[in-house]
Image (cartoon, rainbow, N blue to C red; front, side, top):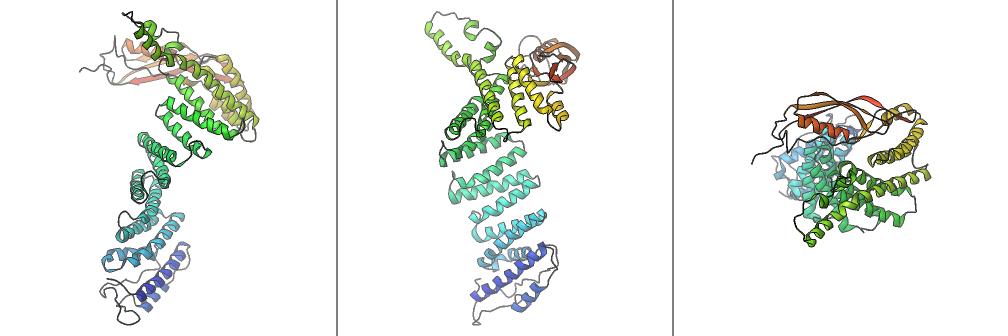
Length: 498
């Protein structure tokens, strides 16, 4: 039933009194009974008429009870809950007037640390908006995102995702699908998926964020660079190394157009390129291992029974890029890491000694990976001296050089051909001991224990021997480390019968 202008003014005065009482409760002021007095004076506990005595009014059988102002909870939430219970008898104007005070109360409760009451107030605001404007009312976005943040803070990541999904759907209906207004919602969704370790879902949202920014931003502007870097990080995590490198190169080219040489703003893109090249060398890229280890290429090893020169030419074309990529990658990785060191050395006010030491350590690790131990040792010694001058030098040196660090190691896979391929490897293991010499190379490999077939022992031996380590250092000098131990456990079978 519609209410008169006089009734709406009276309710507005009531809400002003409630808001004041709410602030007093949140600020731990002395409780007051003013609300009950006002309710009694304006007659909200009984029938009410307008100034002419003939206006419409709420049903006289529906009463707003006197609200306890001495409660720990704000009176505004009790009034909202009561109106929701009797909502069909009250006009939309009353419900709309409650939403803003409820959201202010929810924020105050959150600031005071009372998240349950903040969540209750936010939930009541959502219910009032639903009742007033429908499930796709744009006013729902703010309380939905607010509740999502509360759930995220409490560790309820699925609940936060549910709230954010609904907010995103409302925004889609109101503003369209590929709009920039949803970027804060998407960023919050990425954080929740990352906390849940759902990398695929987080990656899909990251792709969407990038696509939206491509649509709305100049792809050659500085403003676009942070989104390129985020997209590149996602590509690295999903093992899309080539795509990641291209993105990092794009970001670097944009930065070089706007920034002077050796500007600190170039460091993130340079480190990104180097990290991609490091992972390519560590995990192997297509064709790279055939060349890096001096093995025959496919064209040399393939038994070609035809004299068709066109077919041979096709094979060579397919192998052309992989053959060149390892050497190109090594040069680019070295160049970018050296560039980072130059930038840091020229800007000591921007980079601490620990950060500079980290750059030298990354260069040393890279040189170890591409089998240049002498150059690696030079970089490690510089890093050692930088860390040795710090206050907590002992802990920093121990963390970086106290034990050999594994730089490259491929866990042995189950034999898929030859001896051992039909074995069941559930609860099987191989344990070995070994040393790492001054050049980061594995020596003195011995089997400690094993219940695996001989074929698995052989694969384990080969995998450990091919591993590359950052050697241990003592007084800035590389030393041999003995009695290292590694145990690998296996499960399943390699052979599948179809």
